[in-house]
Amino acid sequence: MSLRARLVALIFCCFGAAFAPGQVVVTGYTETGNLPANDDDYSGAIDLGFAIDFGGSTFTQTYVSNNGYITFGGGSYDYYPYPIDANYVSNGSPGLPIIAAFFADVDTRDPNSGIVSWGTGLVDGNAAFVVNWDHVGEYGTTVFSPNTFGLILVSRTDLGTGNFDVYFNYEEITWDHGGRVVVGFHDGNATTPGYYSAPGSFQINDGQDVYAQGAFLDSGTNSLANATNTGAAGLLTFVARDGGFESVAEITPIPEPSTYALLVLGLAVIGFSVRRRRKS
Image 1: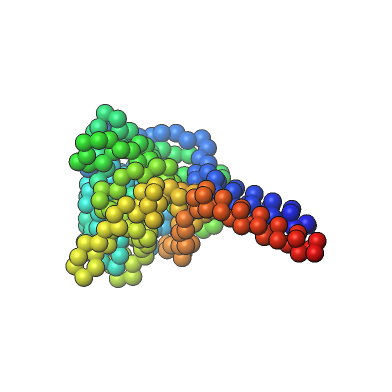
Image 2 (image 1 turned 45 degrees about the vertical axis):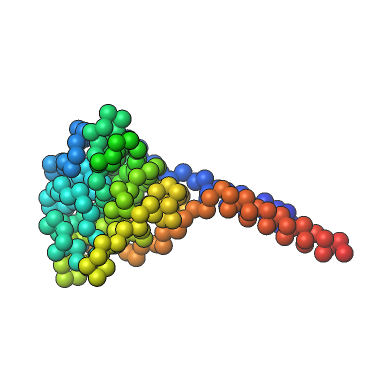
């Protein structure tokens, strides 16, 4: 392959990654329920349509919180996120297994806000449970600002009983409630916990609250809409096998278009230099 062809291929790959859609294709989707406009409400028990092995416990139902997460074994109205770490079980409410796409103080009562809904479908032929926080608002603000994100559980019984995948999808994050946000999961085990907290999540260090204010916003240092561990912007995945989650692939930012412009310019300069050397 010529140098020019290699440069074109590399540029194409870079731009393809930059603009890859951050979404999971769900077919045959049927909405089965929603939470009417509220502040801090949560659903009753909802059938997933399949069984998952989460931390050694089998669950066929979940509870959807208005505040950006789902729990197992019971529902939670918690609006103030607690860190997902080794102390989660003693701090949580009451240490319920949790999967949090964006655990923050969501308020959908503003007339401009969307609501939280859920349903079932298929992902690559596997049964899936989908939750959407569509254009939802923030508690305590006078000017409406939207966040749109989603969570998908996908049954992977094709790879073993109770196995499943989790996807977080972020389309737009414009508020973070002063940095009081947690993204991750915890299986609720106190002795040998399985958990993960995404970089930028709220933490407690030496008894002090630590907020990475603005980190998760579209323009933030840990922008969720531009983050990936799949290659697609705004799409994160976590893999659960045999009751535990596998190591989480590193979450990295998708470079801004301006970064790619600089890369293209650099590649063009390299190509020009090589051509000059060949001619000389």
